[in-house]
Length: 251
Image (cartoon, rainbow, N blue to C red):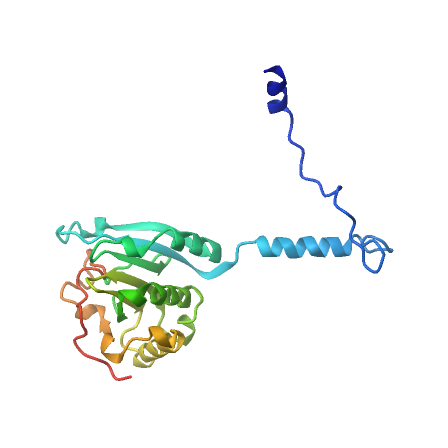
């Protein structure tokens, strides 16, 4: 027992590379030569650290879970919960891989929105905007959702919006035999920007996942029945989005 105690309290030495074989280039040590300063080894270490460093995203994002319930309008926002903030590619995949949307109850939603933007119609960044809504069969929805998420964090959608417009976030909402996948933008009146978002999404989606025109459409947030404008309350995407498009836009 005494030997065990002594072992557990012994100081831990720092990792050392002294036992590694020396690197050589054409038979010479990388540290050889005047003024070299271990150049090759330092460069290798620099490259290794660069690969280990988390790759930052251009914008910070937040994952949200929106639980559908029968609560009244004053209590609905309590059902909207922040899951995690995302600032690097690594953290995105960590959260994505541990947030399986396939287990969500009917009419629950997941959202990925830029930091400081809530996934509600009345948020200041959303209230004048709208969303492209894609009705995707459940057999295709997992891959479709992943593609849309990567377009969002990779700025593939953002780079086609016009001046004054912005990509606010993306959502997925569970329906009986499909999922509604949405791309939210800031300015619903900028028709060129709205069309550019649709075109970029469709051209970036693999052909086998691409929906037919009858299964996608654009809807302004202000046209929803329960939109509250400048009032304090608000409603998210999960409960009031219609199952089928009311009007199919021209492509």
